[in-house]
Length: 197
Ligand SMILES: [Zn+2]
Image (cartoon, rainbow, N blue to C red; front, side, top):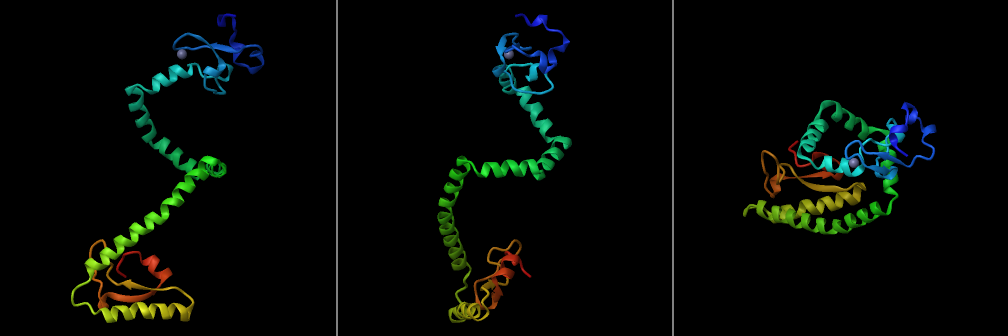
């Protein structure tokens, strides 16, 4: 059956009965519907260009340049932000969380945590070592850590030894010595986060 026989009514789904193919507007070939991406407002609910032609177009430099600009346009950025906050996005993330692919990724991530912790600890102890001046009083320093443990037991809240001037501060770096130490609750210390207060 030639597609030229269709009237303008062919956009109506009721007139698709028995129709399984459409022609591609680019390559002109008559192909089955599966070869076209779905789109409601188009003829037969399919896009006018076949998947092969659309794929070829996406590979061209002109398209890539245009797409990059289009995606960075204010309207598209606003749309992207709105989508990220939308309930549709949340629902799709929730659905993704139930898939095997996600569980596999999560497992892989959790397996890497002990490794990360080990690296972080060794980096931290190295930084402490490099920040300790020769005149630092190790007895006083040890006392701080012992008091922190006792305070934790006494108050029931985790008490930590904090560097008043952080060892890796942004503008100024402190020393690991008795004059630069103070006791803080863990919650307060996390909030302080490498800043001088
Ligand atoms: Zn085509």
